[in-house]
Image 1 (tube, rainbow, N blue to C red):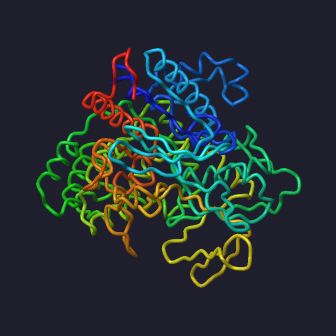
Image 2: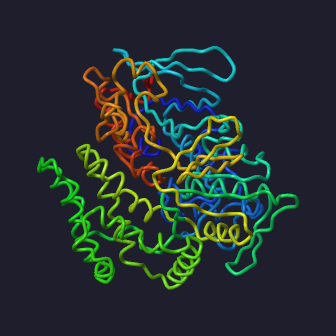
Image 3: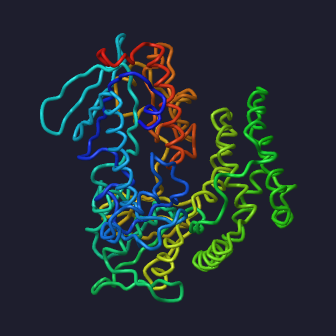
Length: 537
């Protein structure tokens, strides 16, 4: 919407369908879906302004509104992290401002809440949508263009079997979990969200203690015991200071990777890893010497990258890393190797759609985890909360490797972890590994599947990583008989195979910019955008 307004001229009509009662909030920032204690992991400085920056917007909010959302009015800063619900308020406000601006410019904007689009079909004269309102009859409506921005796909009730939760959202569902032994698969921010929701349901965090925070359990909650589990049993690291916007790279540049892609060679991953090593050595020679970087193959570097952390108690590592990050923040010091990896993840993302199957598997298994670990750092407050819970005897983390099995279909509630011949039952088990790439079979609009417009980039088969649906660089689903430039897909789960690092706000903004410009250009080419005295289409 923001990009379309900036690019389009003339009169046009936009209809926005939203299943919820309010449009513009976004699932990760919606009340009920998120607990008030949950923090976003993106600083204001990183959020692309939507007519107004988050910090400027916060500074003009009433004191009581900020306090009610858990924001200190005297500590607003562009590098601070804020509650998810506060970001939801910001996005909702900016969405309504954009709608008002569009209408003032002559656009016809119809925001239809409590409406679910259940199907979409491509026809010769447009895109036919089947719409089911919460109240009223199902209808069909035709549009010249359709943009699919359906977001995450989670069940409305995450407790799909007694005690077994397919996701930690909505957070309100976790509040009903009684004090018990809880297993959580995952250790990233998604898992931290689940831990925090459980913690505040059965106690409170108090500003005090060795790490500035302690956890005080409520009465009669002795049975609460949370175990996070992941392959390596590691916690995410604390957010680290770095310059924004990104400083340019010297060796592993977009141009260098594009040249590799243009070469037509089948082996792209190893030459790209050579560029990665060169960039990292240039940025931080000491780190390169310490890790033996010049002689490492990709698989060896992945092991070396995590080696020190896997040999250290994860909570001790978290405490030390937090102190380092806090000191660097105070000094405005950037750790060179961390910053180099952070900047390279977007460059390496260019490579992914062009990798052969073997290299795609290697990238997913050995290279992607390094980038995710580096950019998916979390607010310092999140680390403090984990340490406080551990200190209170309420939180542990387990490394489960690859040879484990989770059985959630037995007679017992929750799930059973089978690991190294041992059996451990969790009466409550929460899947919190975040959104996974989805295949075409999961696409929510069956007619587009039947018409062959939405199809898998690679045939789905056992053992193969999901590579998502076939789209072009402008996010058009590609098919021989497809609707040309009439359809755009920004539904993240179906793009993650091709674009593995797109789950954040900045990536969503960049994708929106591309589609907004393309849509404005399509309106201009087709003459759909009319003069002000003509009827918009």
